[in-house]
Image 1 (cartoon, rainbow, N blue to C red):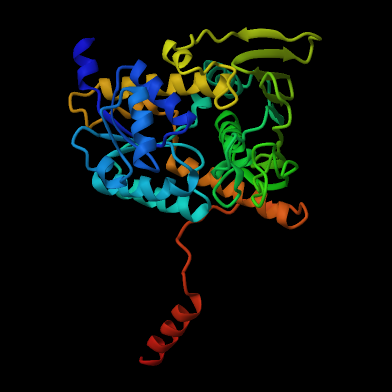
Image 2 (image 1 turned 30 degrees about the horizontal axis):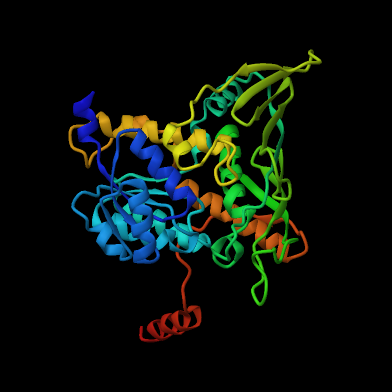
Length: 399
């Protein structure tokens, strides 16, 4: 076992926020060496690096990407930087694990997909950890085995406190990728497709920003990111998904994913699975999660009920990192990986689909809640269609 730990690849982490700290803690607890940290400023990078015992820190992107001890890059910074860093990392020849969502728009995600296709031997995964929760794995198996019959309805409720911090940052700004739809909705869209094996065909949604200022964030700056979101999604085979994301509920985090079939229903609350048949008037617990909290998280003051990373997401990340450890531990060369160990992980292509759904929900909101088709990008749009049309016309006229 010690030899396998030594063979694990070195990690470079982009980001210094609470989620980055959690990821570093989980990686270190699994036996990975976090060799380098990037921060927006050198002082911030130094502060967090010392707190987390990371030997190298910098505010320059290339210093992490070219670091000789970094084989895998974890992109944990704000969404507007995701595509840029992910694409560059793959071009340098290193693996990428990217936080959700895959950028600010479908084009960002599409460029990440293209890079992943160009370098197919490199790992390029999204950190949708809900896929690795035992409750969701079991729910998916039961759905595939037709234990609840044909899927009719998916209903998701997420209640949490405010996602904002004391100071104005990217989470306050819709243009920078803040808001409950990006932060939580991206995970929900992914897990619905993972569970049902169906993609959304069209969506309809509403986004609201009810809290435009706080006691700490006031003056000339206003919050523009959504703090409430409700959307519906029609799946390929006719089932309907309804999702409510409400960040105006301080206190205990509520996370409920309900799948209703013709013969019964399954529901995951937090990280536990419950089931009920149509002939029964009482649900029963089918699987209780037993993932332990990591001591290093407690040292950082982060509990499983933290608003930054509540129970399902925290436990999912722990399981995802365990799978990464197995994937890299099965091979001799630390730059290689065993795909079967992470075959349920979300790929960049999954990230593109999720981003497409998010974009369609925003468009629906802008157009007074009208239903929008989910059209996944297949080629990069022409930046200057009028010029291209003129060139094609002039070339044709030469013949």
